[in-house]
Length: 254
Image 1: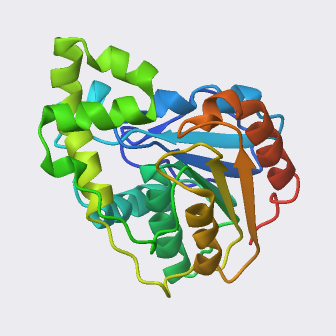
Image 2: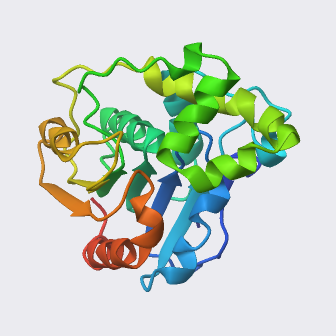
């Protein structure tokens, strides 16, 4: 019999139940992102996969909770939540901030002797690659300007004063978490890493995405797609095909 699922479902959102699932995919959103960003994934995958989209605190129906502005604390909490889930081979997918969250969660599973089956990191430079980002120290306009630079369509929503005020606390916390995160050059996982990036991403040059190669002792693949920071929206069919290929060989326990 499977163990009961974790806490009260605040963190883990399932948009399609898969009682026949042979593996689990956990999807971690970008800074300011929410679980529904990944809503199409479970319906697009052909594989029998339990898809879990993570909802960080401080947004949407979790707006009453304080957002977590320390990436290590966030990874600790997510590891605690996910390790209580019924046991299935686990693959992690994260975009932008979510990529380093996924990496740190994978490291925590590996430290307890439960390596994950695969790690997909999208729209983020290698975790030890230097950056002097200080958006979180700026005012509201600095955060809005950064969002416009990366994805103008999302910024249009935030130009609504009410929506902006509701979103800013979580955005600021997320930017602080990822901009103050530090990773040693020798920090690795043993699972395969697939790095995905857009060829016109202003935040993740191809050479910086390649740096993920140094953070696994397993296989590494870099895939460059057309587009900017949110290339995966237009490229989702290709990414779904990539995930289906992965899961065709990931149904056996590690």
